[in-house]
Length: 517
Image (cartoon, rainbow, N blue to C red; front, top):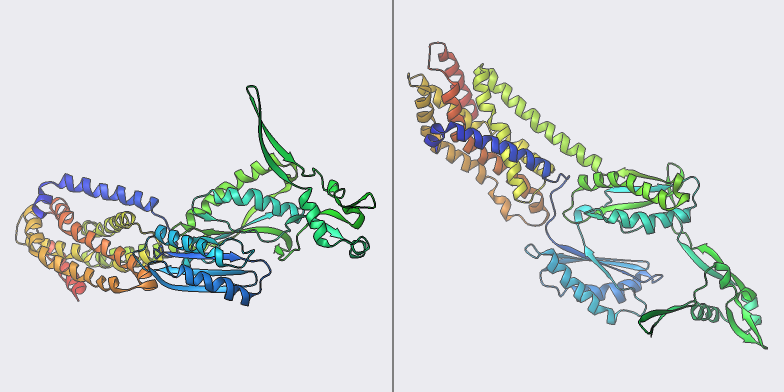
C-alpha cells in the first residue's frame, strides 16, 4: 500500500479530495441533535374515558391493556399511569424488534381488548414513543388583539395543527388555551317539571330533528341523483324551534323550556404569553426525527401558513404566529460548543507540533491528518445512520490528539532515513515501511479500547455506542492517512538532508518520544 501510494501520488491526492468532498456533503446532510437516535422500539397506548376516576381507570382499563399488550413478542418491560379520565401504557421492547413489528402487535392486542373495556370507552390511540422526546421541541403561539379565544382555538385546532403535522417528523397532538366552541342547550328545571319533561327528552328531541342521513340515489333516465336527508338547522336560532312533545294539541318547543346558544365548552386551561391570553400548540418530534431540522422547517412554514390563513379569513388580518419556546437553541449551543472544543484541540495540537518542529512545511504534513480523519469519520457516521450529537462530537474531540500520532511517527522515521543521505522518495518508502506494523498495532490497541461498549445495554449503549464509533472511524482513517498520504507528501515536500536539518530531526525525535509516553 505504501509503495503504491508513492508511485501514484496523484491518485492519492484525488482520493483525499474525494474524502474532503464526501465528508463535507455528509456533514451537511447528516442530522444534528443533542442526543443520539433512540433505536429501541417503544409504543404507548393512550385511552380516554372522560370523567372516569383514576382508580377506576387503573382497575378496569389500564390493567387490562397491560395484560393484553404484554403478550406481544419481545416485550422488555411496561410502564403505566392512570389519571382522571385517561390512562397511558408504555410498552418497551428488546433490541432487535423493529418498530413496525412492535406497533402492529400492540395495536392488534389493544383493539382486541376493546370488547372487555367498560361501555363508552373511547378506542385507544396507539403511537410510537420516544423517551428522548418527552418534552416539546417548540411552542407555537397563536395570538390576535381582535380575535376571541374561541376563534383562536378554532384557527389552531382546525387549520394550523393540520398544516404543521404535514412537516416531516412533527407531532402536534393538542391545543392548549382558548375555548372549544359548542352549541349548548340551557334548560330551566322548573319549566321542565311543569311540563312533565326531563333533560333526556330534550336530548332525544335534538338528536331526532338534527340529522343528516344519506338516503341513497334515484335514477331517472340517464341521470343518477344522490339523495340526502338533511334535517340539520342552518342557524343556532332555528334549534330553539325544535318540538319536544305535543301537549293539548300544541307543540312544546325548546324555547318554551330554555334556549340554545352558540357557546363554548367549560374552559379547563388558560395560556398567557407575555401577560396576554393566547393559544399555543406544543410540537413534539417523531422517533428518529431531527430537532434542528424540524424547528427550521416550522419557522420557514409559519409565514406561508399565516399568509394563507389571512387570505381565507378576513378576521385573521391581525393574527400572529410565533415560536415562543425553541429547544433547538440549546441543541445548537451544545453542538457549537463541542465543535469549538474540537477545533480548539486541533489548533492546539498543530501549535504544539509547530513549536517542536519549527517548520510550517512539516507541521502542514502532520496537521493534514486531523481534518481528513474527521471528515472521514463524518462519512462513516452518515452511512451508519448516526447523527451529529453531543456523544459523536465528544468522541471526535477525544480523538483529536490521537489523530496526529501515526503521522508523527511516520514523519520522524522518514526524517531519520533522510539523514542517511537517501532521496526523499526512498526515505519516505523505507521510513513508512519500517513503522507500518507498529502503527497498525497501536491503532488496533486504541480502537479495541472502545470494544467493551458492545456489551452495554439499554440507555448506556444508546448513549456511548455513537461516541465509540465516531472515535473509531477517526482513528482508523488517521492510520490509513499516515501510510498512504503522508509518505507521498514527504517525498514531494521534504528536501535532501543537510547539516541544518539535524536540530530539526532531534526535535522530531523528542516530539515522538513525548507522544509515545
